[in-house]
Figure 1 (cartoon, rainbow, N blue to C red):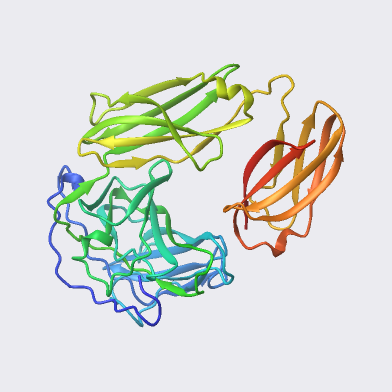
Figure 2: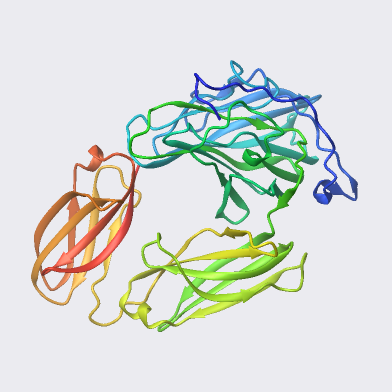
Amino acid sequence: MKTTSTLVCKLFTFFTILFLNVLVVKAQCIAPLMVWQSAVLVSGTSGQIGAEYKFPSVIAGVDAFVTVKDIAGGASLTSVDDNTFGYSEAWQPVVKTPTSQGVSSSYVSFKIDFKDSATGSNHTFPCFQLSFIDVDGDNQHVKEFVAAKGANQIVVSNVTTLALSTISFNFIQATGTFHNYPGIDTSAYVTNINYNYINTDHIDEVRFGNITDSVFTVQDRYSCGYFRPITMTNFYVLPVKYVSFNAIAEENAVIIKWVTEQEVNNNYFEVERSFDASTFTAIGTIMAGFGAFSKNSYQLIDNAKELMSKTIVYYRLKQVDNMGKATYSNIIAVKLPVQQGRVVMQTSPNPFTENLNIRFTTTGNGLGEITIASINGQKIITQQTAVTKGYNNLQLNGLNRLAPGMYTVQLIINGTIISNQKIIKN
């Protein structure tokens, strides 16, 4: 989307019926043409978590109620719907980046409920489509992302600039690039994504967010959520819908399990492992199941020797379709059983705001050093302390001066690096 000075939200008003069978409920279902205008605050404080807005008559006899569910990473809601720019029938929230420079990921999320205008009871649509238009960047240091939960199918262009990732089960995020695409155009498929819904009266969560580098300019980002059936040519359907993904640590191994309920043109899965939640390595390949529209269960056992010396391990799934396109699941963390002689470090709270507790056990006395560094390795805070055999508890205070974002906390005892952990500053 565009900043105040560059946004030209001109949407072509051609709409065609999706021929995809995703919007079929016994017979073909045509997604309605919703009109989102004249939002009114009905409860809570405007722009704050818990604020509820009413969009009257999105179709005849049906109102949409939008509730601010969460505000994260220093973002703020400038407007729940801005028609100064853009297409007036679309839902166009404006989300401001954090007000201080620094690498960050920030967003505002909403819950949407559809209700009968006369009775106030829930209104179930046989089908509807939420299309995010022009998910891009500022040409410099900010790129946008959108996400929606619970869609029955997700469609992007076969050639797309969007990177797809899974936040949690059936909660898919699309992240644009730093490049800015002038104007907003429903036919600019490379920056668009469609979320298709069947037989529902709500969307549990929708996110509008921004990813910034260290030298971005604070700015409003205009978004365009369009509740209309926008057709893509050369479309690409997200191949896999997950039911569950988890991992269980045993004494000398980790068992990774996942279940899918829908697979379209799926080829294989790769299980990837990381010890820092950043750099992942493939540890096994599992071929896709045979039931495209039934539940398929998968399992892989990780018994690598490296696990013996670690306290926590991270896993994710890389799914590859028949065209070679890859999408990634959410990342799960597994706490490993304590081995005799191992030093274990725990940090809390994480994410933190002002204070950080660091707890660890050692097998002997010595000199300890705690370092907080930026993600590019620059040391920001270093604190030394005497450690004693057994349980130790340190607290770092006054961390509110740190910019929101991700950092690394490192524990060194007697000159040896014992542990590194990722921490997040809110």
